[in-house]
Image (cartoon, rainbow, N blue to C red; front, side):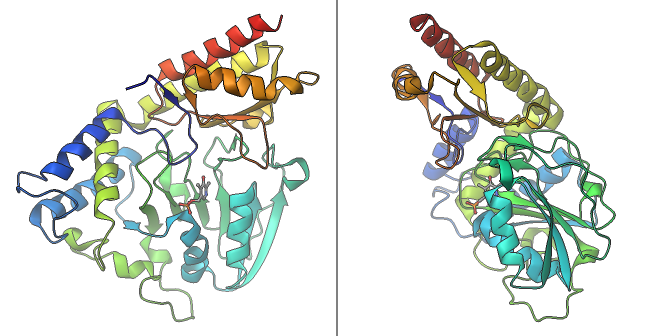
Length: 361
Ligand SMILES: *Cc1c(COP(=O)(O)O)cnc(C)c1O
């Protein structure tokens, strides 16, 4: 197979080990003689995988007992309305740090009043707003911890006087998180914890069942959390294969040393690439330095060098770089360097930028 470096924003690179066991499980799952795509989700071997997957989440993120951990379909975008359906009584506050956050605001408005406490839309979401006040008369405050399209990230677990809800689709498991500071954390798996097709929801159980409106059975988080561990997330047919690959991906995270080890590697990779962007006269970064994401690195050609953009894209492609085109709303380049992206890929991209600089001295 051709040597490539995968910088796709999501779905994206997964650990080789997870791919290998997925291939094997398609042939034969758990020595049953049939493949994972063909088993019943009531097979004991599968119930074990479900329970273990929840356990891996709890262990890796140190999730307290009073939080439910459930796996659903529909992607993070479905959570944009399931969150307010379950938690919004009268009013909620949102921090608008990108297009995903804006979409979450739009859906919350179906359920109640929404206050956007701050927005960075004025500068194409290139920074995280600071100095805003979180209102205390709201049911929750919603943030997007990593803004996949713009390459900005909230690097700490912020203190909130009200229930904190976070879309962590693109930085979950990339660093240690103090789960106790959040009422709820959710996201699509396809950036850091698995393939597309499964969504994770971590929610403190005492927050549920407090709204007056009737909630459709599938939308109500309580439907998916049962006392019996082996039946959790099994109200209907779960996305069996994506959950299996998530299980294998989390096993890999654990073997690598957990989220602390991921965080260390991620900082190292991001520093290497940002240093090159700052040093190389042909490129500039687009995100405010203090808010730069460790997951999505956005950059453009330096002023005066814009005409070289297509040439660099072709040059990088020639050298095996995949998925570095920036989102259409930002332009330029975006390298997504999630947990499973190896240091060698970042080194290869840096070398490619240096070679390109030599050509244009
Ligand atoms: C990708 C992404 C989404 C959308 O996820 P889907 O699973 O495609 O609905 C939402 N929020 C963030 C931060 C994302 O990166």
